[in-house]
Length: 323
Image (tube, rainbow, N blue to C red):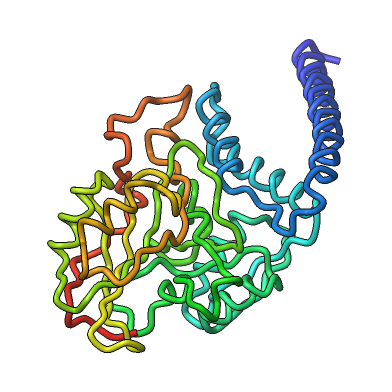
């Protein structure tokens, strides 16, 4: 055997030993997950999206060498979802009518190659599947300014649906464009649990105001409440004449008892009918996060969005399409 082939054979043996070590660590990790499962046995909803994102952020920060970060994220997403299924039933409902196959691709990228996924032609069917616990997660298209029938107002609690709610828990794609068919496709994931904070979050709020309250007034109220400048979408409420509904995406994490939410209500005064936290999501990885080599420090200000995943909400003042 030539020295070159002997060296190649030795390297292959080293790879085999490393593979065995990786597998042994997976077995040890699963043993720990079994203990987590026992502690969470009384919890109906097992998913913890903030914790999942925190794991990925940490791996990206400490990663070195030429192995691609996108593939690193894919490996850990498969590992995370596999252990979710290990803890209990886990399936995903996706809004994927004809022409929206890209959203199906985003769901598959985020929630695993072998997770059961059901296709739905309507957004409300996805929300019903989640609130009825027929699916652990639902995936829906990002809100847009020109929708005839937006889905996000259905997340606002009412006397009839207050006990069966769903919250926004993730923004897709989380890492790069993935395998989604079609350029620039994005989605929100929902689940019947308010997500835990990841440390790099955006909050989603739903507001209802009187029809005379315009976009500028809402933005000023957010500024006075120290909630940052929101990305806003607004639609007239088809159920209640004279009421305008707003979807707001803001940097940071907001709970229902956050004093800034009370300040927002005070700033809008009698023009505000209600304000509700619709969920939160961990910031998707940006170009600085995914740059090759060691961890890169982003130049963007905290709480600002990478151009690759900005929601790009356009101005949408009263007079827009009805839901």
